[in-house]
Image (cartoon, rainbow, N blue to C red; front, side, top):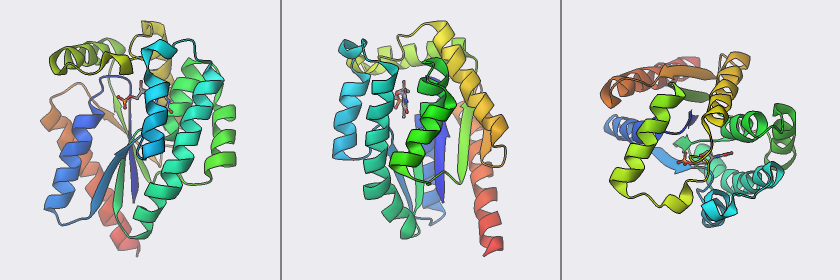
Length: 216
Ligand code: TMP
């Protein structure tokens, strides 16, 4: 099963992935956690270029080509082999992030993003996408607080620096995607405590896994 986590900056997806990974391991299920852009040595190098604040002059189409290149490498070298061996793959962002950020907020449009995915990455889509949804003001406040507390490399914060309207468009892009593909998406309200959100996330995932087991 291929599960992706999506949402605006500060939605809490990274915390939720590690809580879910721990829960699945407790239940004896093999799972593997990865992220985009990144997940391979080449992908992580692309991530450095993609997110570096010094590269804020980057065109949206350059962004699309970089994340698509990283994704092609990630899917063939990491994700597909793990799925073939029966491992549950948990991925921090995937194609829906490109639709929301480059397609909606940066203005390239959904069709261009989906066409390059089909052309260069292929047909692999998540079985389940958990969209952690919260208002932009809450997400941005959380991500600024987290960066301040952890001393996160500020060089990686190119998108966090964008204005409020950009993040509103990202959120709207995600919600539109969820409306277009209701069977794949689960919208999880992400304003509560990490524990409450985790119970919702784990419930959704375990229900899907049980559904799959019945279908076999
Ligand atoms: P994160 O791993 O901390 O969520 O940061 C990744 C950043 O990259 C985030 O600001 C969203 C952005 N991004 C895109 O703009 N397009 C993409 O396709 C992906 C995967 C991420």
